[in-house]
Image 1: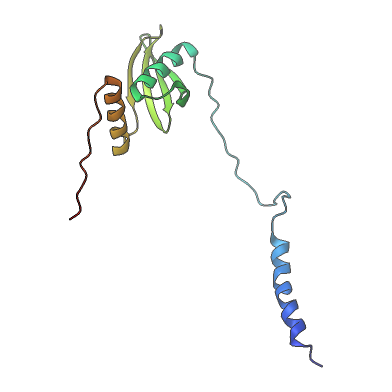
Image 2: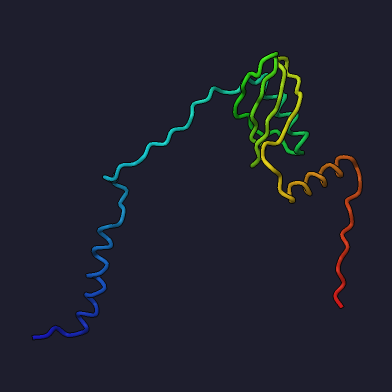
Amino acid sequence: MRLPTVILSRIAPLAILIPLAACSTTGAPSMMPTMPTFAPVRPPVNAALAQPCIAAASSKYFMGESNIKAVDAEPMGGGLNQVRLKVDIRDAMCTVTDKGKVRSVVDTMPKSADQLAAEEAAARKAAGEPAPVKKSKKSS
């Protein structure tokens, strides 16, 4: 005796989906071993070194100080320190004295053409120069 094809056409998709549903994740812990991730523990950067660097980077990159974060500081010797900064999506290195005088702020990542154009436009705006007029192409 054969089963009607209507019943088989309704049962077949369920027979395929039941094993897939059993394999889905339910939020229970996995038996697969996971690799631990380690982040280096860094002490917070001294505010007397970080704040002057953040202010200098803010004026150099024409960004608010809230977009700049001091990541790490290392003494170089002779009263100088290097402070690594995270400036939006870029990295920078600031050289500062023990007394808080900034010697330099240097990019450690190359800039894209868009970043260069944006910085030039911001510098012109800060200097009060008018923005260059773009020439439009005429269609013939």
